[in-house]
Length: 388
Image (spheres, rainbow, N blue to C red):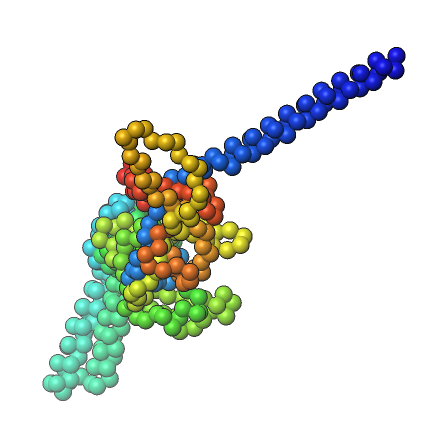
């Protein structure tokens, strides 16, 4: 019985040792296989750094308004008799936009004109009698006062009659009418808005640190987003006072709007252009990677030479082809400066001639082998998407 037990233990030990030895052999074989297996290079797009002419600028957010724009109102009450305009119509200066019922005022004016004419005749008669020595000075003075009073009454009634008419104070585009024929309106009622869309202006604010960089007449570009700024203009006013609450300075610029694509009240991106600078190191914003440890880029360099496994013997009469040069990336932390559009200024650790990865860096790490394929770049992809 003991002999059988000892034989069973020996057999069990042999089986366990075989299993353990096989596992050790397998792990070593797998480790050796992956150690000798070449790393598959990653495909990336690259750009070479070249010094550029940098156009720095001050970016802000502004609100567009018309250089001339008002909400038209009436000065007196009355019933709308005529409204000779339609929405979005181009009107000339002094064009009649609204006519209130003025029958009573016209009758009063005619009566005042008749009285004024009679008083003027009385004045002329009194002056003639005085010259012949028949009339007195008192009579002339009384007649002159009556004539002047009548003339003033005519002028007053004419002004009251003019208040029944609403005219365009300047040429522009009239908005949607807010009154209808037959409607009774009171002073202050808004009839419509009148905007001169040929020339616009934008009001925006900049930090007080940039106040010294501004001057009247400085060029400014505008757009609905920072990537597309087709509108141009210049600074026409700079507030000499800094807001003590926000530490911002109010600035006003004039915008040319020939196609009338901008409307009053619209939001715009503003960029005040500063003097140009040459020989600035700048890279596309797609090449810059931001992490918790700082901003960095991947620089493409020749890979370090490694001992390669012996190649199989070439066939008789055959020649061994030279291997293509290998490339790898190196992670380089940089100091970021200003931004302009899709360009980022680099202050440290990059120089002209460096080749950096502009796309495909999400799967890269320091030392990863790469192959360069610049047939497709982020700029080309964005351009095709915009065209579609």
